Length: 76
Image 1 (spheres, rainbow, N blue to C red):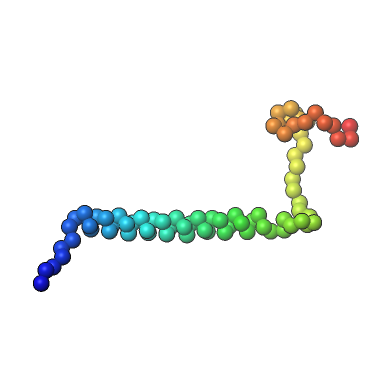
Image 2 (cartoon, rainbow, N blue to C red):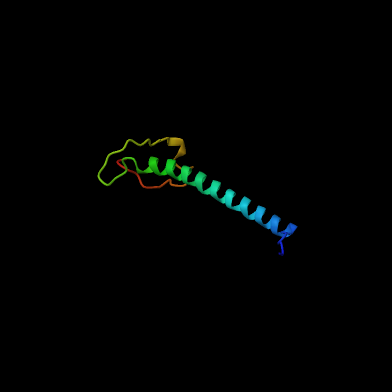
């Protein structure tokens, strides 16, 4: 009867593959948890026709410093 003795390359390759699979699994779980937290925050109440409280800062000194600044005047 012939016995198969794995050489060092086979063992190293199996260990590397196992570490890759474990690392990939951890990455998938952590990514899913992060996505789940961010998706819940964006979906709450932001529907067509709904009302949400938002903060808008109007500072005269920032009128020309902002990238969204406009020359258009609204009601004087």
